[in-house]
Image 1 (spheres, rainbow, N blue to C red):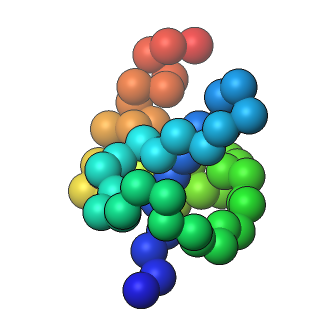
Image 2 (cartoon, rainbow, N blue to C red):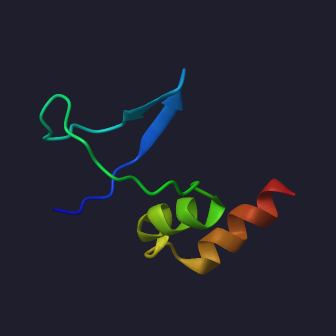
Length: 64
């Protein structure tokens, strides 16, 4: 079984940010990969797909 989850590293321990279905003491292999700006953009891109570009430009110009 392969599953990718996000974890936070605190006090020398990797803590999962979601529920994992594992038995206590189970040994796993992990791949450490830092989340960067690209990952954040990719994750939230879908929420902005339907925004009208003209409206976006108008909002930007009003804030100047």
